[in-house]
Length: 237
Image (cartoon, rainbow, N blue to C red; front, side, top):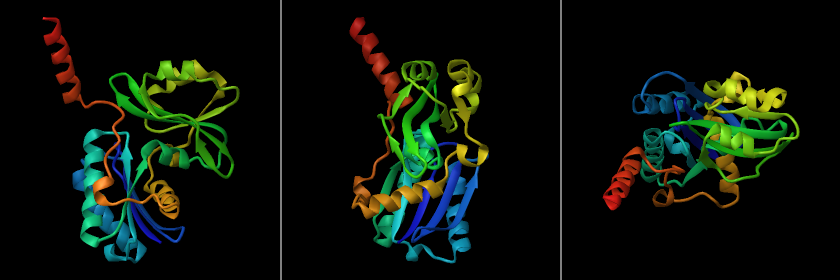
């Protein structure tokens, strides 16, 4: 199976081509550029590097969220358009699951953290045995302190994601020596991990058509929050 995967869920923009379990190419950038500018040139570069074409792909996969609302819409709409144009299935992978897949080699607890802004992180907990990694809780949008003080870690815990760097001091204060901060090459989003999970999902019959693929936001957008606030204030008046 040939898979074109992409992750536009946060600042990192990443594209990968996986063929029958072999990573043929991967392109990633972590610059202050919009994904609408970067994504398609990176798709072309990844395909060129793999020696394959868009028509060779059997599946298109994307990080479906959580993450940046704008970034998720760009990635999801691009994958849906490619799937429609090529007549191929598409697959949405939860961003936090893909982040945890970066640390599939780890034995013990893994926490994937994404910066959700407004004083919150997107977080999910995983357990690795050195060969497989399994999510052990539902993803959520929550303050870092509330999350880490609620969870019980008896041993060291590996933390990764773009929510680590801006909260490093708080993480070390809350977890002390138990906190292991992932190294740079596995800390952030990678399309290769999206591709690996998408292949597993396809093998299990979980791939889907274009209409079924939707972003996973975990919380309301700013516009929706403002609307809810105005409705509450109007009800009190």
